[in-house]
Image (tube, rainbow, N blue to C red; front, side, top):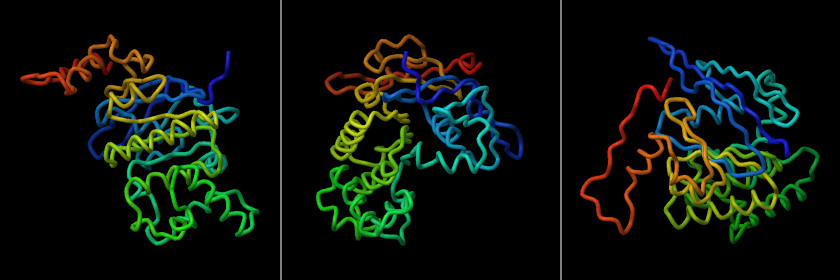
Length: 276
């Protein structure tokens, strides 16, 4: 049996607020191998909090605990900030939702990507590596894009730049948090095709966080469905429409479908017991 890249057991994330403690993630366990694992659920279900906890990027008012959080030989649960500097961005990359808020507005694209390269390269070598990476994410004129500022790039190009930046250090695992939600349908499919190709060709693991069940069902290998901080169901992506949990069924029933005339979409009914 092939050992997973990431093993998480009983992960919890709790936030301190002025009035109470809010448990955003509740004792969840899962693994990620060299595959595409989708994490879906409503806003506030704990998807992004899970991804950030793995990289120890939880805000200061958050408390993270886990019985086990193992990435290859690294114990992430007990890792110090110094330990994480050798992991974060280098061995585990994170692609965020909107490049407008993730890229430095006063640095040229090429310089930002070059920052992620290992030290010791000459300027010419670094430039060549950056241009190769821009080309690998299907940017047509990498030489021109290299010298642009982020505001001069479209949303789709900005997202490709983010992907290039995360892949330059050649990580083993990517965490993509809603990487296509700010894009139109055509560009979204292009970005997904790039991710799919790179994951398959490089043998990476991918955690794909999304609200879009239809997208996850066609793009991912496995799906974790989260509700109120818990994983309520796990299934093969190809079998998502045969999911058995009432919450998953409710999410699917609330989606409009082309070619089906409905007077009224189903309303999701929640059971408090699902969060227990």
